[in-house]
Amino acid sequence: MGYIRFALRMLLLLTALVVCIPLYYIWRLLRLPNPWPRTFLKIAAFACGARVKIIGTPIRRDVFFISNHLSWVDIAILGGHSGTAFVSKEEIGNWPIIGWLCKLNDTVFISRSNRMGVAEQINQLRDALEETWAITIFPEGTTTDGSTLLPFKAPLLKVLELPPPGIMVQPIFLNYGENALEIGWTGDESAPSNAWRLLTRRSNFLVEVHFLDPFDPAHYSGRKEIAAEARRRIAKPLSASLGGKAIV
Image (cartoon, rainbow, N blue to C red; front, side, top):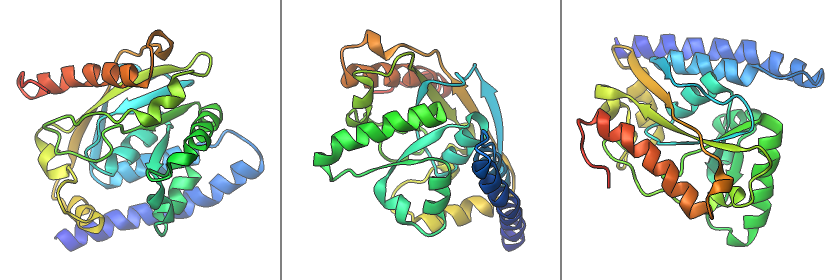
């Protein structure tokens, strides 16, 4: 049955690609606001079994989302339900198909090793904010099993030390509930292995997307304070979801 579920879900994904990609290029040629990356990601999240419940009100434009991170499916869920672009590590841009799809969604690829290119990367982030109106970063830098919140890495938030006019930061808490351990991509598990496990699951799963209260980054002295404030706001509902467990 796992093979059948995998085949059906892949068929839905491929059908979505066949429909959305030509429409994406037509809309781009006509220079119209392009809904097709968001449409595809929403279908992709559904195909993976995600049933999304939105809690709170997402800011629609001029926003920098900061979210906890459990799985690659986070991207499909957030992109499909908010239209955001993403910040990603550089090597993902070179992955077959996945890298190409990321570029269609205006992903900003950041090199962790190229410290000399920080200014250029900041300019890329600013351009992406102007182009897509919303961009998401996962500042933990890796995925977890949903039972903890890793320290936030502040360097990429340098773009907010002198924030573009009107930009707000909105933290997001992704809550997979009792399915977090199974959905989370942790340890030495490979991406194909995690994808196989997710696409062959017997049942769907609920994920709550909590759009938390936004704040103005201009009211904070720098990226470290912005990262700390975002982490504090995400840690609070995470702790509540774990029965009051303290999040260090």
